[in-house]
Image (cartoon, rainbow, N blue to C red; front, side, top):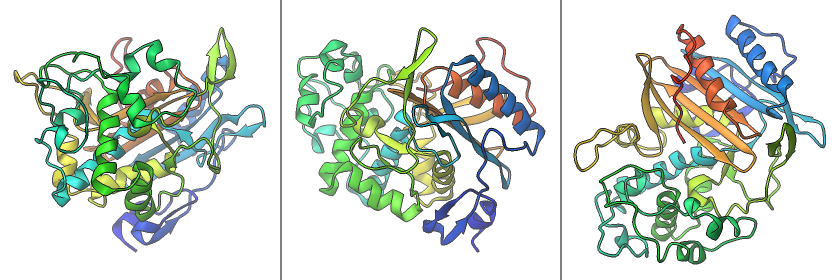
Length: 381
């Protein structure tokens, strides 16, 4: 058995095909008896949120040291069919997708097919006028290109229907840059949409197929996929919104819109496996992963807290590499504290602050830190 297999040896109902081992995690629900003080605290925190009606359900997992502390679901994955959430429940993960896209690009960089400092015009047809935009600047949100999700009704009215690359990018045809490339940082979904197109153009494959064949299948991520609404996805959660204190079904969105910026589905178990695989060198080289998790400065030397698909910050004196996601009906957070070998993943099927707040409370408790004071919490988009 490999060292990774031994580390994950107590895990949940998922086969780690890529590592040549299989693991089993006992199914746990809200009614499962807590096995630690931390788990008991988490049960109480989540119970308060569920009882208040803020969220329909969530799943979470905590890995610390050389063991899985717990992985479980709370509340409902599907209110109308009375389906409880579980560790295996599959959620839209929103912008956590970006680290998968960044990893796909870094694999192409390692092959010599993409150069981070090259103009994006070498790989994709997008008008940049007098500006020179690099692949690096797409990856770390410093391109200055307008984000299509910030276009207001010009974009939002199209959300329920499928959209092609040409039509979506056409919405940006007459949009000026927000700033000169490299001068500022501004979260940008267009950048990662373009990165997905680069993957397609270089590999002559769809973004979904490339990730499935090159990443999901080899790593045994059986519950991670492009979240196509037509596809049958086992254990998929329904998404909800909170309107005036009442839970209602989320608004429609065709998943061609988020694309490489936010269109993936996964569960807490696969995301644990993903984090382990990234750090262990199974996805990209150690040098590539370091590049992904090491922020580069702006043109004027100003330091940033964002690498490639990852935010990097400190929780007290503990380094955190993390990213959240928000998409119709879902809010998510996946964090790793590399110096402490701590992973905390929270996936919810109702918008709100629950995922990021809960991640912080869990991490602080696991690290023996006091709870954050108001305004001290940090999160990533």
